[in-house]
Length: 491
Image 1: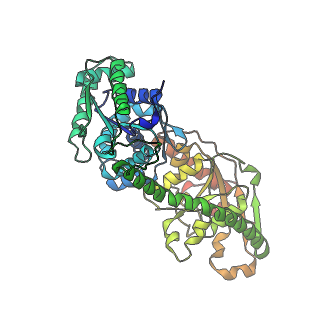
Image 2 (image 1 turned 90 degrees about the vertical axis):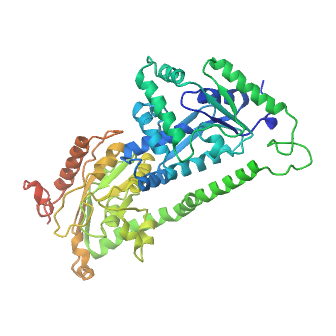
Image 3 (image 1 turned 45 degrees about the vertical axis):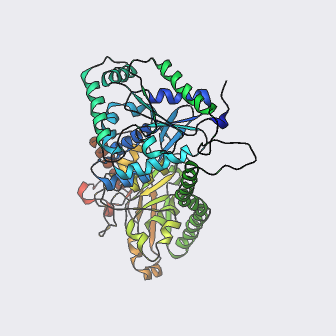
């Protein structure tokens, strides 16, 4: 039978080194008293996993900061903690050795901790919550009414960690425990230590059920204690209680969360403008092309109606994205466009069209994450693998970024070709009714690969290049491939 939730301590902060029993105790509290349990260590592990996948190193604080702000990290805190990167549940992978070895390095980066702490405080402010980690009572929730610090000697914790993994204890496990303790206790940002006023419990010689019983006793002792002006409890009496420092902190956290969500809400509101603007442009442009030029789009039946899709093409003119979209027509395309376009006086139009910026020829982590987020929702992105317009009309070398995104997202690639838009650099060409053609090829299915190898990326890049080239007339094909066989001609 649960205690009166109005008298329970809220939130509860649990700290301690690795394998000291924090997660087991937190989950037991959630089941017994109805708390939501957040294992904050999993958040840092999820960030480490995202960084490993993106090739970000802990000694690159700028890249870590960008990833922390852009990573699609989502947490479900109920009686247990589940962590998602986008729509992928990565909870099970977070205990893998490669994540275990990397997490301490990333958790020391101040920008990463700042983002994670803000998210943790937001979760703690939403009802009954138990947070477990290494800096909860000292940094995240210094005003928590009940703070616990669980500890155990290194050897016992190494035994527990190996037992969790179903393996026998070895020197490597003990070494990992010792290294994590030393790194986390000596780091300058939020070091591991017991918070002032915390109840310290040495679990070395205690069975798990005894530890849980001891913690339950602390919770019930708090709930049974007479209320004082400093307690953080909910009362039903007529007299309003003076807000405590914790309530003030919760209010500030809620306001901060509202500010952080403001851009998302703003974009959701603007989506009501973006979508109609996009389809208006598509259909108006199709009509204009029919009137002022000889316009033809072939192969629209090849466009998959559902599922993650990357539309790729050669690139001849800045007008290629809307013209390609008008040719594909069946689905809305979010184009990856060079960042310079968004800085021009008419930079609002690419955004209205649903495009997002990319720093070309760099490892633009933000753009890659945006692309993967769209694809995970089953959306469509448009990319020109050459990275810039062709000055000669011939297709140039392609870059591996498209293949990397396709493999990581498991997105189908739709090769297309554009012919004739190089003539549009001179507006007067409309007097000659230029011929513009879009050809849409057969889709290329791509398997999802968490960590694509260099060979996989190279092979898919070659396949994409060849698929686009096969749709081009001979005069447009990449000269470096030596492709001079039969193919479509420009008549």
